[in-house]
Image (cartoon, rainbow, N blue to C red; front, side):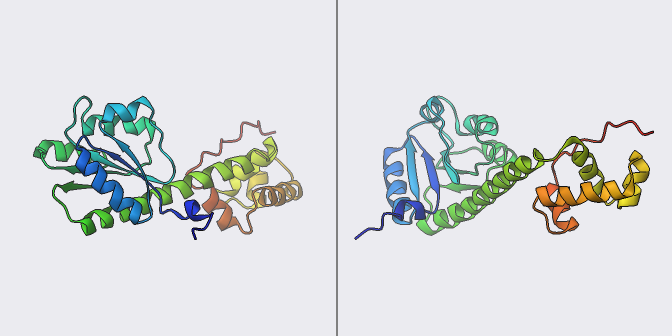
Length: 217
């Protein structure tokens, strides 16, 4: 008897875009048996009509199709779903097309015919990249929400904290009292749910903490 939570245990979502019906069927069967959810499209334009991309997901993309080409769709994916790994599958591609695909960030390029194992290995690697991107995106959202809890003054202190300034140094550059800076510093750590300063710095790495606009006395 199947478990009601089986749908939650899938390995991820694979979007197959290929104009060869037999290829779509065989890939769908293989992928679903391996534990992936699958969406099928017979061309890039069909996908573009309703470009839904779940998370995590990988796109298996044919190079030559009627209408929008594989690399043409890949270029548009930079704005539609820029973190979704793309794997090209093709039986007829020119070297320059492969070069463009790889320059645009394709994870891999498989030439038909390919073995099932080769396909699954590439998908597993690409899905891992997608899962990592999802974790990073979720972390960014969570940290952004925590930053909203900071008062303007706490945000100023946070700006200096992640740059390694001590309480006294912060007080010197912005004219505040050292004891007051200490209080703001504690509130920053509490609101950001950071146990240590290195943890806070790691949490905010890559995020833009605006520079203080206060006028020093």
